Amino acid sequence: MIKKCLFPAAGYGTRFLPATKSMPKEMMPVVNKPLIEYGVDEAIHAGMTDMCIVTGRGKHSIMDHFDTNYELEHQINGTSKEALLEDIRGVMDSASFTYIRQREMKGLGHAILTGKALVGDNPFAVVLADDLCVNEHKGVLAQMAELYNQFRCTIVAVQEVPETETHKYGVISGEMIKDNIFRVDDMVEKPEPGTAPSNMAIIGRYIMTPDIFDLIEQTEPGKGGEIQITDALLKQAKTGCVLAYKFEGKRFDCGSAEGYIEATNYCYENLYQKAKKKESKPAVVKVKTAEVEMA
Ligand code: UTP
Image 1 (cartoon, rainbow, N blue to C red):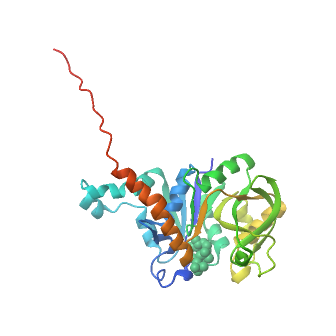
Image 2: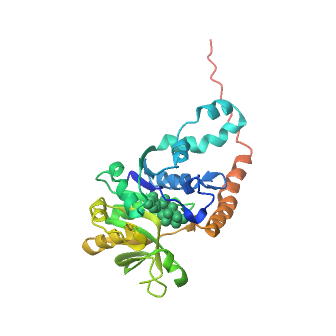
Image 3: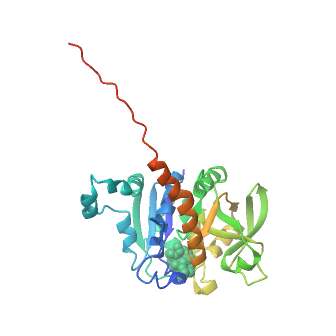
């Protein structure tokens, strides 16, 4: 069972400036919940209990979010508003949260390597919180954890994208070994238009075996001068095994304005409104039978 889930959350979020100038991108709310909480929910749903978060300067609000706020709690305890804290209290009771700081933003590969001190010699999941994934029956990480139990190797989640979009992603090619599962033989980070090996793009969900850390250490800076996880994963695919999994569900790129708005509309209609309707149904009154002690 995979227990650890790593959240690289140290990036600058430049596509969302100025909103992200002093607020972490991962704390941007989709309806009433910050992005990173959706990712943590998904990890808990997949049976993971250790949330390992890679942070950076100006990211304190992430730590505060997964901690008790005594003043607020004192103020609303016993009022009708207390129910609004139920979900986050449940999250905090179901998982532990540890943090490490990435001192220099040298790319996703470097952020994952920074997380090694928290993850240790264990297989682990990686969630990029700005990719919001929704499957109301079985979350994407839960689908991937099941696959990991079967194959015991690194798995990347992929999604078909239009050819005009491939330059924004890491793109894989590989042989299909089962429905929706591919054995990766090539991987290119942000290929130039017209050169992508396929239209299957890697999205922000991974399961990795711990040998990836040595491979990242041997990886030179690549595209954009950053240490790219795609380059380390390609080495792993060449020397061992990496699978790509075409997941079931929806994914919103909340690092872009369009994806963020789509996610907000979707979550408002399909998650938030539904939950509200459930809450407003008259409660079933349970009649407790009195235990009468006969003299
Ligand atoms: P992105 O490239 O999507 O995030 O990195 P970014 O750099 O924050 O955003 P833009 O492109 O400038 O708008 C993917 C993930 O990797 C993390 C980011 O926080 C994001 O979750 N990351 C990236 C790090 O933790 N450290 C880095 O050095 C780079």
